[in-house]
Image (cartoon, rainbow, N blue to C red; front, side, top):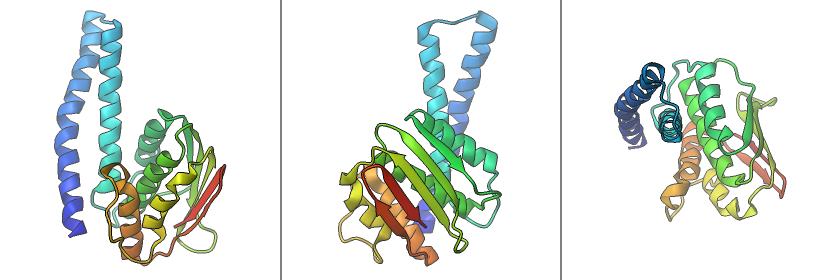
Length: 196
């Protein structure tokens, strides 16, 4: 069933990105030909750019994974743009990720975004022990997100579903269980680490 839901997410993102991209291109052309530089045009330009970034992130995080390669530039640019708006710097040390690995990284980035409401720094690299990933987040960590992380680290699906705003925790946990990965989490007031 999760594969079907991923296909639905991919389809929605695919169908939305084209018209929003066309609007973004149209605004850029208007700016070039009409010399429009009003605050209203700047707001529209910023809004369409944000929408395109979010759709691309949602396509990576909620869409279909797989063994096909995901260009690291695409992954890095999408996550950096999204997290940068939230004052979170990101460093990804993974080269040539597959779509499945990009999905795992994107879901983890959404989880970290929830934990760092005032910004911070995140590094994601290959785990030295195995082929997994190791994430370190520094900043003012929201400790009240610990129950959400249980959705990721639990060995079985939860009895109750989270709020829609926190679905990425549930999806990351489900993905890791499906892949047979046992995550290890450490959370403190200013540092969070996740081996996944």
